[in-house]
Image (tube, rainbow, N blue to C red; front, top):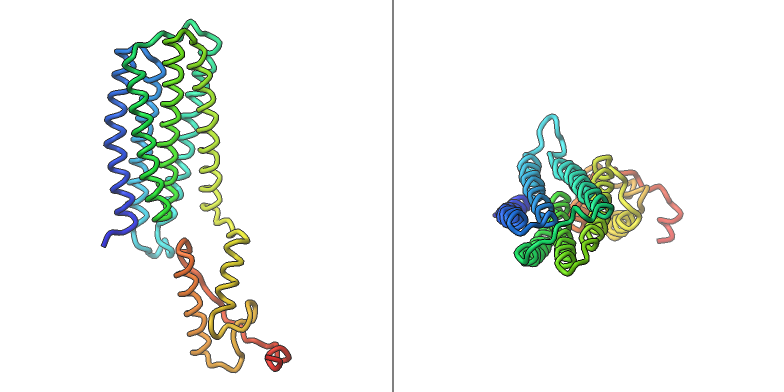
Length: 281
């Protein structure tokens, strides 16, 4: 049976293959076609290869079963990889943005490219957007933060290629400043995506409490579970320990079934002491 890690590995390996191809053709087109923008875009694709390898490493560690040192398994490795990928994403964006800003002040450094890098930019946009869509689909299906981060890295590369296309096209038409302006705008967008992923990953690593929406859902599930009398005081005080334990275990199973992102939950049984309310019912 295919596990969530198998699905993640399949899509990630495919991404690595595509990014190797894109890195080679972008840098080659940049060198032969006199375009620094597409060379920088090629380096961005190269960074995608590194992040995808990071996802594979995270998957390998995460699927390791729990042991004495890690009672809840190793799945936090995925979140850790996501955290590291977001930092790389921000670093790449800052590097691209600073380079674009420098060129805005020194337009003489912007060279007029040939048609080749423009065509490569279009091909890159199509491939990277395709990679984003298939990767984010699997990431949502298996609830993988690392794969989601990798998917956004693909989309950031697509936007990077859009910037390269605008810049190359603008430079070919005589508007050199379009290239560095587009580069800075895309860098800001990529930085925002990276910051969002960084914050989410940091919260998961620090075990941030679940939001009110999920808390209300758990309360609703508990209230509709047979044998549960209330949320704070769970079961009839006259039940046997065995029956109380059975109700608690059943509630745990129902919560885990209905909220698949929860890896483990413990229901503590308290005797239901509200005699007046009990007699009214």
